[in-house]
Each structure stands twice: as structure tokens, then as C-alpha cells.
Image 1 (tube, each protein chain N blue to C red):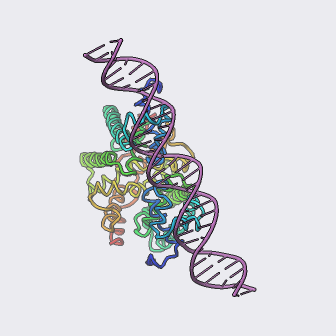
Image 2: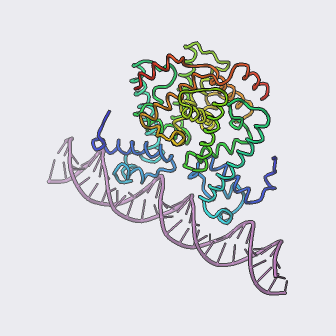
Image 3: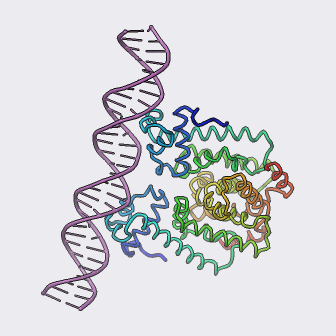
Length: 200
Length: 200
DNA sequence: CAAACTACTACACACTCGTGTAGTCAAGTC
DNA sequence: GACTTGACTACACGAGTGTGTAGTAGTTTG
């Protein structure tokens, strides 16, 4: 897993650079020339290997999805974290996760499909754990969105904490904070009923 | 509050169009010419009123922040929703919230400052409600991020639900689902201790 | 009435973008 | 040794970008 950068083929370096820059700056924000420079190749080579920017993006989508599934499979064999997605705060998956969320927000179908699969998984997990919300699908969608929230807002959360949450110490801290959110009930069922009446 | 579009000054139309397009497509994705066309004016007028794209963005930041605070003040006088930010799912605040999150992700200091203020508010609220997490700051940051997550991923959540969450019916549904997340404990304190040992 | 100011448009400028084309170079293949 | 193939670079093109400049029409000000 610790592949030296120089050992990667140019094609792989381009793909990795694209995932990094697309994730950091968004699809529009990262130009082919930027990516080529980051990978240490000419911009023409990007086109040679991937054909177009859109095709490069799709290749990144596919690779990121496959790698995430692969890493997820490796992790689930070491114990279930009971609902808190182990991928969520896994350092190797960081750039991939960042890229996927960006791609999702920029309208990628592959990335969105990955989210929908996540919702399915959460819904199945909740059901098997005996959790019975009034709206299981809505509950699962909310939970799936929540799992990504600290990632999407990692810069802001890091600033609020005065600590980079992409470091081991940082993501341990925010991970435990997330677990507390899932543990401490904020509202009683009576309060919810009251709000429900207010809204409609 | 229901100002007809035609009655707005050109400057206000430009600002509203910018907030809408910046929010939908990102700062880079919305050109000055796009914004001018959306507002029904020439691109030169955008420059005349705001000076530069960056200045336009800052003006949008300030306006969005002020309006959000204003709307929030109007809402808090009608009962406290006990932690679930009423702004979160308020239809009038939708375009503003969408813009602010986008601006935040594209590195706006004003938008990030608004997030940090939100964390402060959540922390103070939790404390006053007798909620005592082990890491109050981390807890508040996680909760603040969660409050924005369904907004950021509104397209994906809508797809998962088969229902547009920017409609009244939709945001009621996801709002109630969020409340259930805050109500049903997913983890027991014992499970958390177990995970904590695993991680370190 | 003249000057000044404001809202507004038209147009051109340099730059960057994604893309297209032509060509080099090395490693096989016959 | 001629030929092909694939990795790779250099360069040019048209479109779109933010920005700059010049100018017009209408109102305000002296």
C-alpha cells in the first residue's frame, strides 16, 4: 500500500494527481495543465491516456469507487464499528473520500450512486440492529449524509477545533465527538411531537 | 419580504443572481457574464457596481450573513426548536444557506466565520441544556457540521428519498428524520469505550 | 444653462481553458 | 533492417474568462 510515487506509471500518477486536485479545488478549479504539472508530465499526455477531461473524471470516479469498496472490504473483516462507517475516518481513504464528495457535489452519477448504496447499507444495518425509526429511509439518508459532513467541512471543523482533523489525533477526536452525538439523545419523543405540530 | 423581482434595483438583482448562481455552480463555475445575464444587465454593470468578481463575492458573503442573522432573529422569537436550527430548513433561507455553504467550501473567510459562530452557539446551547460531552468543543463542531450536511448533499438526499427535500413536504420529512437521529442512541457508552481502545 | 455625477452599454485586451495536430523516441514485430 | 505501436512532448487554435476603456443617456447640482 506504500507505493513510492516514482514507481507509479505515468498514467497512475496522472490519475492520483487528478483525484488530489479535483478533490481540493473541484472539477472546474483544477485544469488539465495543473494536473499534468502535479503528475510531472506534459498536458498532452493526460489527453493521450484519458482522452478528455470528462473521461479523466469518469476514470477517477471508477477508480475511487473501486478503491473505497476494496478498502472497506479489508476493514470490515476486523470487527464492526456498529454504524460508524470505518471508512469515514480512515487515513488511506482520505483523498478518495474528499474526491468522491467533491465529484458528488459537482454532479457525478458514479459518486451519487455510491452515496445511494451507502444509504441502502445504513438502512439495512439499522433494521438488523433493531432500530425502528418512523421513516427508515429518511433516517438512513440523514445518517448517511451525516457520515460525510465532517469530511466536507473538514477545513471549518479543523478551524473550530484548533486542530487538523486529517491528522490521527484530529480524526480520533472528531470521531469520538461524532460517537457522542449518536449516543446522547438531544430530544425526547415528546419534544419531537411538539415540533411536528408546530411545523404543519 | 415578497419583493417582486422587477422592483429590485439592478444592483440588488445582480447580487441576488450572484448568490443564486454562485450557490448552484460554485464561485468558479459562475462567470460574471452568466450573472449579468441572469440579472438582465450587461456584464460591465456588474463591474461598475462591485468592482471585481472577488469584491462581488465578498458583497454576497456580507449580505448573506446579515440576512441569515436577520432571519434567525425573526425566527427565534417564536419558540426555541431545542437545538435543531430553525434556519436549517427554512425555505426563505434556502438560497442563502446554499450560497454560504458553497462559499465556505471555496474558502470564504466570512462564511467560515459564520460556521465558527454557529459552533459557539451550539456549544453554549448544549451547556445551558445540561448536555455534558467529554469534548464539548468537538461535540459542538460535529453537531454544527451535521446541521449543514443535508443541505450540502440535498441533491443526493433527495435522490435517496425519491422526494425533493427543498419542497415543504420534503424538508419536513428530512427534518423529522434528523430529529430521530438525535433521539435514538446508536451506541451505548460501553461500545464507545471498546472502539476507543481499538483506535489507539 | 453648463457641469458633474450616476447608471449603464459596447467593445477590446490579455490570459487561461480544453482540445486538436504533428512529431519524437524507444521497444517490439515481421 | 523496415514497420508498427505506444508513450510522450511541443505547439497552435478557438472559445470563454476577468478586466480595462470609452462612451451614452438621464438626472442632479451649481
